[in-house]
Image 1: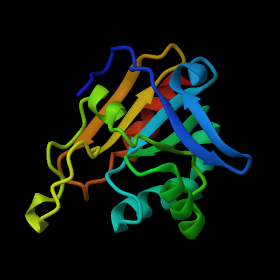
Image 2: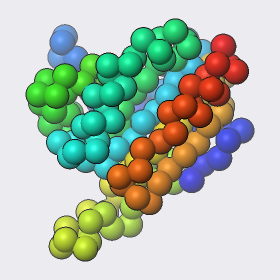
Image 3: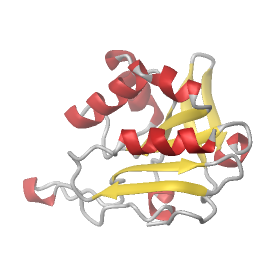
Length: 163
């Protein structure tokens, strides 16, 4: 996993907005605000849905700390759009369909859910990366347990320091 104090790996990922498909590059967001990247394994699953719904409901806390939040999963952008619409998720969802970003950040499972016979490779671990306006990782957390949420209190405390 990439570590605190290192430059955040750049990426360009697809999303679906009200205006249609769009590409978002991390490099184009650097410098505007602090950035919180939240990786989740799969759309339409219980813990992932709960996490992004809670973040969507509490987005004002991140806005007040001058932070943009992006959700990232390996699902295609059309599935992400359907998920967001169904569940009321309002944070931008970025599609890492090729799992290149999960690999660049060092958080890709070799095999996700092999115990139930699936074994998806490259799926991102539930992770959080806080990137400052200079593009440097200020907080990094990843869990092998897909049910373990990031420490959002610690993330917000770090954001308060960066403000």
